[in-house]
Length: 72
Image (cartoon, rainbow, N blue to C red; front, side):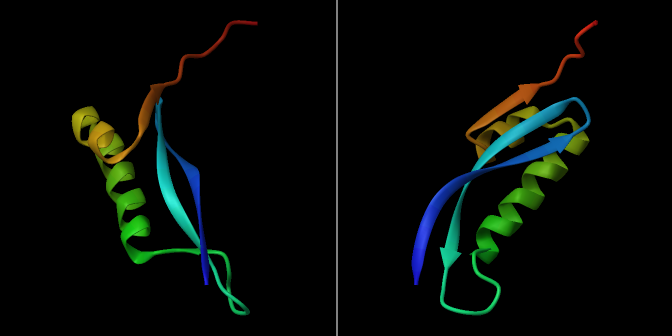
């Protein structure tokens, strides 16, 4: 079993959080997959962004961005 560190983006409203997670690569089955802790962390980041708690989201994620529309 090998692991690989990657980033997942969590978008909620006008915010996007960049979260570092480990993908677990195993022979057969549903590989690659997240650990249970990483899946819960992604859920916690999404909930923090949804409730507007940017401090909590920035503690759980490596970066938090605010999206702004661009006029064409």
